[in-house]
Length: 169
Image (cartoon, rainbow, N blue to C red; front, side, top):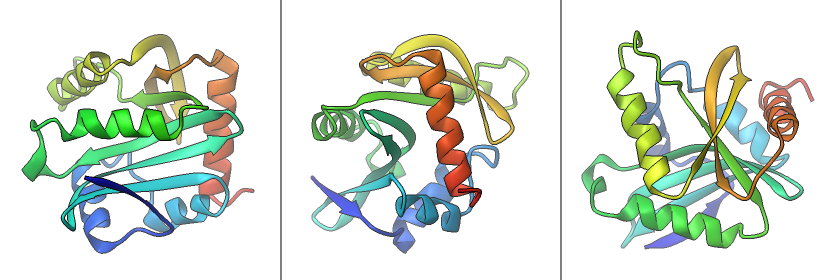
């Protein structure tokens, strides 16, 4: 498996993005690509040309907001996700990283998926922060992925990213 930094979203990555995230989590691809001109990084993972997965993050100095991570349905449960997280941590070893996930709201129709997603990150070395983050008008739980950030640092980087991807900066 190789990690390929990308400067745009290819069709198969767009398909995986569209099928992997809920409407509240997704923004238009054009917004994501706009942010790639100003600090966002798209890393695509392939094995013998086949798409394994991708990560999309926003980098600001020594901080990294890990925004999207998806693996192809065909390879889920085979350890690729764990390997991708390890590669990202190594590639960005000089960054303090955090991520956000949909909160474990028992009334949400996808409650079980939310719990599975958060448990996956916990099993793979992430740590709950106890901080709720407002992102594009929705509240999310946050987790440290590598190192620690203050509450305000996380809030500031999310706002900066949103201003860029929404075209306000």
